[in-house]
Amino acid sequence: METRELMKKATIFHSHLCPGIAIGVLVAKYVLEHGFERSSDEELVAVVETDNCSVDALQALLGTTYGKGNLIHNDYGKNNYKIYSRKSLKAVKLALKASVLDNKKLSRDEKIQKLLDLEPEDLFDIREIEFDPPILAQIEESVPCDQCGELTMDSRIMRYQESNICIPCYKEIKK
Ligand SMILES: [Zn+2]
Ligand SMILES: [Zn+2]
Image: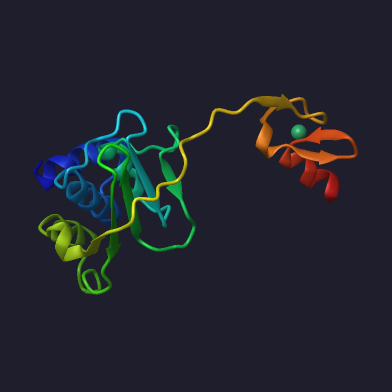
């Protein structure tokens, strides 16, 4: 699909136009053009190292979404994107190259236009990586917190003096 078509779709989801979303669009474009299909379930997994605007393009265009659990954020503050396909057992990593957006004279709009004229290969270092995706999202039981009563995923419950305590209540107690 044309970069600008993808950009339109991603912008509807993201609600504004920005360089970040254009970067994410180019990630998605590369992925879709290299044998990976949009993920209706958990066929694809995206592991991203940033939580900036670009990630919304992956959610909109690749179907790797926070809610389905096939979008995983490692908080490293880098524009790195790893995409795994459970179908083809292939994986690819795109890492933003340093130089491309350095031109400080460009306005925000000029930056967006410049990005949309690039090919993913111009913007990213791209390589195949080992297929070792994170485990599938787990369905977990919930138990009520003994303090606030709110249902809480079992794995997030803390034990405190023989009680089941959720994380916020635990922090409150420990103040
Ligand atoms: Zn944005
Ligand atoms: Zn609680």
